[in-house]
Length: 498
Image (tube, rainbow, N blue to C red; front, side, top):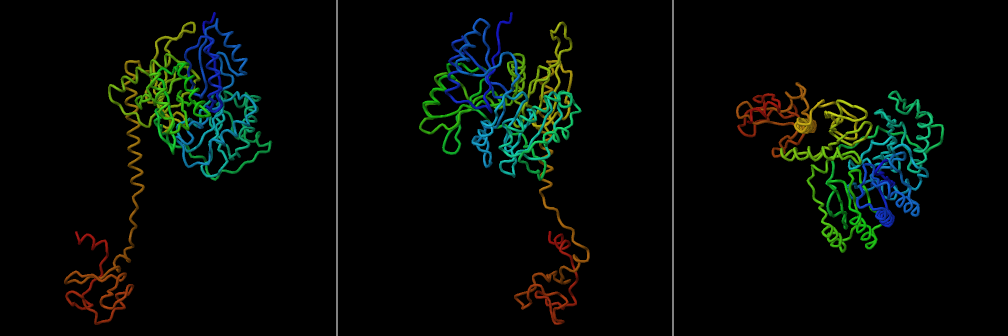
């Protein structure tokens, strides 16, 4: 008999009201649960022992909360909503627009949907099957990227779609893909143009994109601590073991309700963000953290890791690698390191550490080796670019990972040098004939006459050609005659002046 069940509750877009979360936590507490987790797709996860499951089931039924047990038939909608205002500025995509889209979703998606601002890299853009990326130019229009289920085939939609049609088109696309699995599901030859034509049979508000969407470079902000933005504060909370004590979360919910904060945000980094904390209430949040002894200043390189949900082996490997990187004092800024121990799992990463068994007997995996894969341009929003190393034993893995990180920085430096060279204005070549007639130089004292400047002090205006000077013209320094001037080019004079 199975001893525990894993419960999954979706927070659409990673948002939940503190009142609703508090009720769920109270229900979980009545079933003997003391700790919960947050998943990569911004959902709530926790384990319940089988004898307490009926209690939990009854409690969630009374709350009318939808949940899944040991499965993920309805993956959560991922969004960049938690980063809005905190890490994203100067964009048309506001919190209200996200909520408008969520309100229009009238079904439980069976395919993964991502809804993201293009002006950020805090949340993944393309880890879903239906990926909406807000246009940087056209307000209320979205680029669409389809990643066909169980493949790495990505198709960029030929048209941008209006905000009010995002939910309806997502449902339409999902229905077509699931009705024609032989064409679009687990098929590496899936044809995006075929899907596009099928969807176009229904009317949507669309706009032709002037250019393909530009995915942002990766730059992970430090997402922990009590931080100021505008005239308010936001609090980011990360837990090293991914476990959040229920008593701590209950107090968070109660303080949110007390200080009129209307939402709690779950992030793809398995952390929480609470926004809209006012200056007068900041001390209440500091007191709460102190009372529960919660540290909110972990090392930045630790925050850069992504591990599969509910994966003890992945967390153990993360701790091992992190210790080795810390011992070497290795810089990891700008890199997202993913750990993958299961087939078909999805991890957002610049560098992916993939574990593979050398031997499987009766479903039991043994003798693991490790591969290190690099995303294209080390951007976790891109597909795998190349395999850095493969078949590594664990004892060599940390050093190979360190070398992959060094390769990233080497490429970064190469790109910076190339950009600096490109930014230096090119010197325009001066035609030979033009250079020789540009200035005239006295062969005795090397004084020059430049037609562009003339000699205003001697009554010769700017732009007067040397040929137009009177025959009586003489050098203003040594009084040599006009015939004693020779033609010279400015490039030559510049060398002579050194």
